Amino acid sequence: MLTDPLILHLPDLAATEALAGRAARLARAGDALLLEGPLGAGKSAFARAFLRAAAGDATLEVPSPSFTLVQAYALPAGPAHHFDLYRLSGPDELEELGWEEARDGIVLVEWPQRLEHLAPPDALRLRLTPGEGDARSAEMSGWGARLARLAP
Image (cartoon, rainbow, N blue to C red):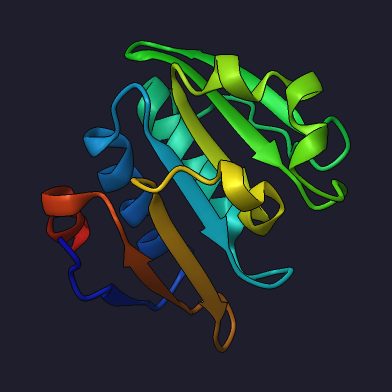
């Protein structure tokens, strides 16, 4: 069943963090969140807020996985992995990062176009587009009936 994308205007960082918090409450094991957008669009800010909300810890240290490529988190609802695939050339390099094992939990993926055929078809696709200052827009698709529950 195809649904129209959900488009939200996020006027500031707090709105982006609130969206991430709603997504964290709806996420469950086996979910993938594919975070798309140019450099500086807010992908890492969204992932950081998502992981803090899912952990129930606003002070959780969430380093960017830009250099490590993947960071793992033990959350109350199960494991989560935050992937930054910017430096990968394609899906062949994912095996050594533990992609298959990580899919048992929640995965957040920055630069998901590098997944190619490994992109989960039932993933939440979130495209962030920067605006003025900390404002951005978010276009989301996937997640079936849960998608509408991401709206404020």
